[in-house]
Image (cartoon, rainbow, N blue to C red; front, side):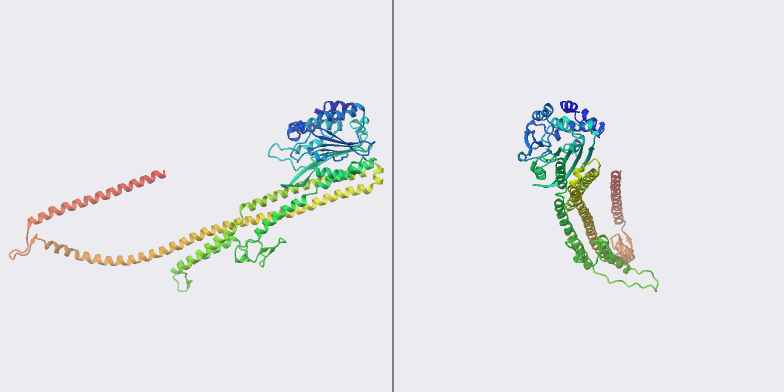
Length: 621
C-alpha cells in the first residue's frame, strides 16, 4: 500500500480517481468522476489562482514532543518537500497534525493540534489553497472523496441557484482485515483501523452588516491502534479556531490513545455547539420587526365602533364584542357588507319616495303609509358626510403601504430559511450521535476507553443532545413566528380589501350625489313641463277663436281695399278690375316664390342630414 501512495502522490492531479482510492472508498466510480469534474469546473470559485495568496500553516506533534511545532508554507513546492520527507526518510505521521490555510495572520501564533483548517474570509471566498495542493494533501492523507463533495457548496455560485443550505454527514468505520487493503501503511504509522466522520454544518454569525449564515465542513479521522487523529476544518474563522485550540489542551500532544480519542470528541463538540449558536439572536431580530409591523396593523382604528379594540403586548385581541375578525362588527358584517348597507339605506329612501308618489294598487283594503321624505338638501348633506367619512378611512388605510407586506414576506422567508438549516443541522447531529452510540456499543471498540472513560463518553452524547434540543427549541419558536407572520399578511390583505371597499363606496356615494342632483333637476323639469302644458292649453283656446274670426277678418280686409268701390250710391259693389288684376299679379308670384324657397330649404336640410348619416355609418364600418 505504501508503494501505491507514493505513485499516487506523484500523480496527485488525478485524485480522487487514483488507484489507491478506488479500492476502498464507498463511493461509486460514477460519483468519483462527478466529484473530479466538479472540482475542475469550479476551481476558480473554490480555490485561489493567485499563488501570492497561498498560505498553509502546519502544526504537528510527534510522540517525542510535548507540544506541537508550527511551520508556515507559502508555496506548493515547499508543501510537497515537507510531506515527501516522510516518504523518502521513512518518518511516520505525527500523533497530531494541523494544516491551516488562511489569510488571517493572527492565527500564525496560535498552537494547533490534530486539525487541518482550510479557511477564508467567508463562505463565498475561495480557499487560500490551489487545487493542485488540495489534491496532493487529499492523496497523501487518503482523504475520503465525500469530503470534497461537501466543498462544492462553497465559493461564488455560478448562477441564480445558491448552494448554501446543505448541511450533510457521512460516517465510515474501517476494521481489519478489510481496511488493510487500502489503509494499512506501517511505513507511515497507519494501521487501517480507524473511523471517519465527515459533516458540514451551518451557523448564524454576527457581522457589521448584521447576521449572516456561515457554513463549516469537517473531515475527521481517528486511528484506534496508534491514536493518530486528523481534523480538516474548512471555512473556520478566528473565533472557531480559538475555541478549537482552547478545547484540546492548548496544543499539547496526547500521551495515550484514550486521551487522543477524548480530545477528538471534545474538538468535535466545538463544531456541534457552534452550529446551535447565533440562531436565537437572529430570530430575535426578526421577531422584533414582525411584532412591530403586526402590532401596527392590529391596532388600526377605522371608526368609533372599532376604537375599543386593541392588540396588547401579549399578542391577544381585546374586544368587548369578541369578534372573529378585526373588520367585523357585532352582527358579523364585514367591510363590504357594511358599505353595501350604507349605500342601500340611501337608495331605499329614493325608492320609497318614488313609491309614495304611486300607490301600490287600487284596492281600498291596501293602505300604504308614505315615509316622511327628506328634502334634497338633507339628502345631499348626508351624502357629503358619508363621502367625507370614506375619505378619512381611506387616508387611515394609506398609512400601511405595500412595503409593509414586503417586509413581512421577507421576514417569513428568512424564518423559513433558518428553520430549513436548523432542521438539517439537527439531522446531521442525530446521525453523528447515533453513529457514536453504535460505535461505543460495538464489540471492536477499545475496552479500555469504554471501561475507564464511560463518563466522558456519556457526557459527549449528552452535550450533543443538548445542541439538538437547542436547535429544536428555536425551530418551534420559528413555527410560532411564521404563524404570526402569516396572520399579519392575512390581516394586511384584509386592510387592502377594506381600502378597495372604501374606494368603491366613495365612487358609489359620489355617483349617488350626482343622481340626487339629477333627480332634483328632473323634478324641476317636470314642473316646467306641467306649466308649459297649462300654457299650451290656453294657447289652443286662443288659436281656436282666432281661426273662427279669421274668415271674417280676411273678408273685412279684402272688402276694405279699393278693389270694391262702396262709396258710389248708384253701384256700391262695383269692382275695380284693374286693381284686382294688379293685386293678383303681385300676390300669386310672391306665393310661388315663397313655396319654392321653402322647398329648397327642406331639400338642402334633408341632403345634409343624409350626408351626416352616411359619414357616421362609414366611421362605424
